[in-house]
Image (cartoon, rainbow, N blue to C red; front, side, top):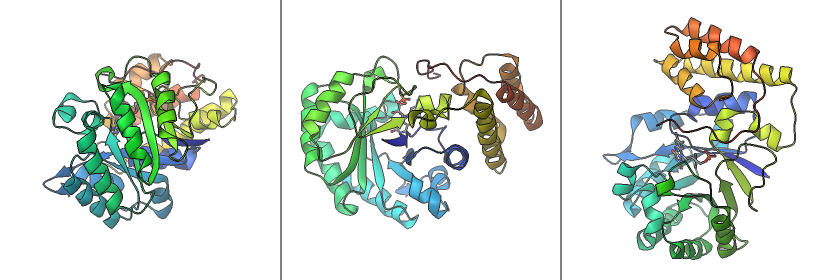
Length: 314
Ligand SMILES: Cc1cc2nc3c(=O)[nH]c(=O)nc-3n(C[C@H](O)[C@H](O)[C@H](O)COP(=O)(O)O)c2cc1C
């Protein structure tokens, strides 16, 4: 089964992707957090996330676009092609009210005509099977039928469905029945990826062609290996996590503000480890203090129980 890393703005940035793929691996494709245009150009921080990646990293990374019009998607595809990317994922699921009010992200599955125009333009300006979609459930079930019909007509790389509505944001149970219905509507031609609360190797996920891991991967970065049937002793688990964390810290130290970014990691990482080391690392005001507390925590960490997806901070 193919395993994909979900885009998580603020978390799965280039340092995370580099550190994870170099030390832990098990992911076939990292979909990068979405990029969008500002005055017709990709925003500088989006460019930094995707510029000057080595060949291996580029092969493992799929950029994602937040776009609404044919003009926007053509501009984004052209600017990403200049960076060496020949494939693109389209964000049809961002539920943030400001994004949805402007007609982007999760607004689009509710507007089949606008979506059709956008997808036709996107497939037109990319090679066949270079476009993938990442969507949420539309508000109306009949729109799911329209989306499936549209997808069937296009040469898509794959479609990822996160079966929650925009109103649910990241809470509530993913709707496995709606996912199974979409699979039927989509038919066998287009690979379908399941996304939503993949946190444990043995949970019953709906029938699909690949799994996309989000917060479950941030909580336990070894999850892809577990899903592939590997096991790790507690010592191996700690050693691997320490190596991953050290690589991430090394990469982030090349950036201006490594400390806040490193602390962000703990919004999700090992949520069951609530101890004094965690408090220390979150309160640290210097990098050496942070690293000492994080190393202590990781050197004594237990493997996570197969717990539910950690809550998303508000
Ligand atoms: C903090 C955060 C940032 C996210 N950023 C993106 C994004 O840039 N693009 C996107 O398509 N989805 C984004 N998502 C949604 C995730 O990719 C994923 O669909 C969602 O978290 C459900 O999967 P999970 O239950 O495995 O976490 C984000 C989610 C969170 C919590």
